[in-house]
Amino acid sequence: MKPSKLYSNKPDTFAPVEFTPDLNVVLAEIRLPENLDRDTHNLGKTTLGRLLDFGFLAQRDHKFFLFKHIEVFGEFAFFLEIELTQGSYVTVRRSVEEATKIAFKKHAARHQDFTTLPDSEWDHVEVPFDRAKELLDSILDWRSLNPWHFRKGLGYFLRSQSDFGDVFQLGKFANKHADWKPFLAHILGFDAAIIARHYAKAEELENKQAKAATIRQEMGGDFEDASKIDGILLLKRQEVDKKQQLLDAFDFRTQDKADTKQVVDQVEERIAALNARRYSLMQNRKKIIASLEEDQILFDPEEAKAMFEEAGVLFADQVKKDFQQLIAFNKAITEERHGYLVEERAEVDAELKTINAELNSLGKRRSEMLSFLSATDSFAKYKRVSTEMVTLRADIDTLERQRDFVHRLQQLRTEIRTLAEEKLHLQTEIEANVEARSADEDSLFSSIRLYFNEIVEEVIDSKALLSVCVNQLGHLDFRAELLDDAGNATSADRGHSYKKLLCIAFDLAVLRAHLDERFPRFAYHDGVFESLDDRKKENLLAVIRRYAALGIQSIITLIDSDLPQRTTAEPVFAPDEIVLKLHDEGERGRLFKMKTW
Image (cartoon, rainbow, N blue to C red; front, side, top):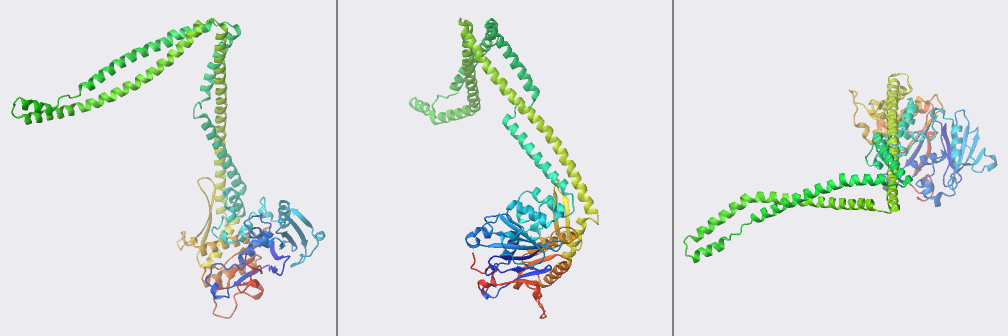
């Protein structure tokens, strides 16, 4: 269950990479001074991980470099040799041009070359992509991942640079939490079936609530009471029955009497009341207008001054001033009254407009009823009643549809209550399961926690805590934190270098906890030493070597400037640990010995 060899049908361009079962180093040397300060060098150390993922049957993506540059890689076929648990091997052949047609070959010896092997000697050829994934899943037999497919958790053991941003949520897990949290809970030793059911129940509850909201919107918020609708339907149907009897008997005397009574008792009385009200309002309006006119001051002080001067009256200016003051005083007194009168006139005009409209409507209605009563042609009356029947039946149809909506809404409310209760019960089970597994020192989760802390503490001399809690929605929240001496979480884990360390520690801890099971036994970490100081690099390397001795294969990539500096001449890596050396002195130093694409 470890990558054993990666090669292609074009060895001059892509040379074979033979992996060991233990530590495998991909070292990129920056030999040109002008490249020392560059962040990326395009030598291929990151690309190697992508090719391993391609060999493990990653989904075809037009953004993937092989397909994005199909004109460059269209003729390539890649072969991934994988060591199985029982000591045998399987080689997966996958071409770029026909990436959905896969071939498989099982064999007993490692580091084979099947580039020229004819199709007749392969165990399976041109296997469709989906079937090929199922076939490889059965060959690898990572049964500890059941019921999930082998590719579900592969990202934890093929960490690309985009996967070091979060310990738990990989780059490919950018979609719903329901797609990855149950799986993560499973490999951590929790009851994933309960968690998956909880997510399914929550989704079903959201769908029911959305349907209920749609029904309420279609109903416009009216008639949510089925009893009220049933009562209105009863009255409408009774009216239909009466009119149907009239039509069947072709006798409109009953209808005539009913309309006559309605004209006398309702319409005429309403018209008389409205006329009386209109008369009263008209009189009131007339008085308001008269009052407004009376408030006008027609006296002109200038004219009064001239008249007094002609008469030879002394102190004409003083008289003018007194009249002006009197006018100002009078205006001040009447200004508020004038405003009230204008406002009252507006209200009277508005009410008169409403009354006139209603009188016009009632007059038209009275005319129609009297026309019906005075009609001598029975067919005209028959037509009139038939039209009313059509309107009534349309109303009944509308009410019946509305009643169906209300009944459906009531049913949904019952289902929503049931789902909410079931979701709450599942949340209680999840909380109990998390509490039990966390408290059990012999549980898988406790083992992973201990290994995780052991790795981090050995590398940076700081304790680390792996924890799982249930949030208010009943979903799991996973946390990986560094602790200070008092046991409190610190913000150190938010830095890129320490975040990467936590990711590496988590991957290795999970692999070690599952060593006795049918589970992957390799980890690929890109840029493993970036941003760490020399002492921490040496500590991390010691951890990786120790885990390799336990049977966990590590494939790490780094550039030579990230190597820890040593005072002795002893090299950091033994020659047999470096499986691939890259450099920036021309095309021959790259993973693909060609021009950059």
